[in-house]
Image 1: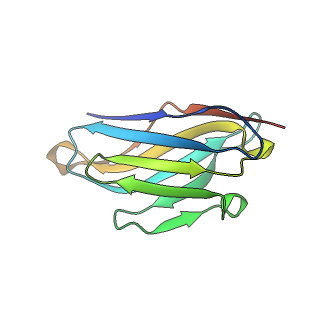
Image 2: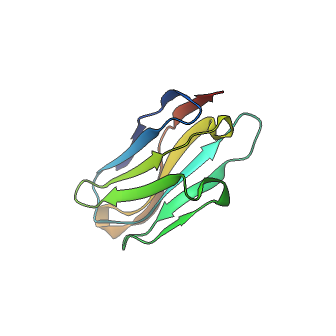
Image 3: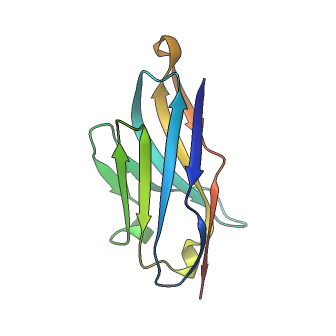
Length: 120
């Protein structure tokens, strides 16, 4: 069984910064890509950033140059450093992990989400 837990959300003024964390635990053989998604009220969930097991990263155009994704493989944790936040970044942020778990069975696991609110 694998658990994914996000933390670090909160309320911040426009122009400020937040750092989100996502810890994956349980019976884990290895973790492939880890992603951050977000969903604003009334909108579809969108992919924000991805990091592969090798450390390659990709970003949505809307966050390039402002957000940075990183991971600590020893801790099975992924981070999202968010700088120069804008009110449009307000959303629930979700972590997704592509995991080889018990018996090396592959599964996709989501966290419960963490709220980020950016005030203008």
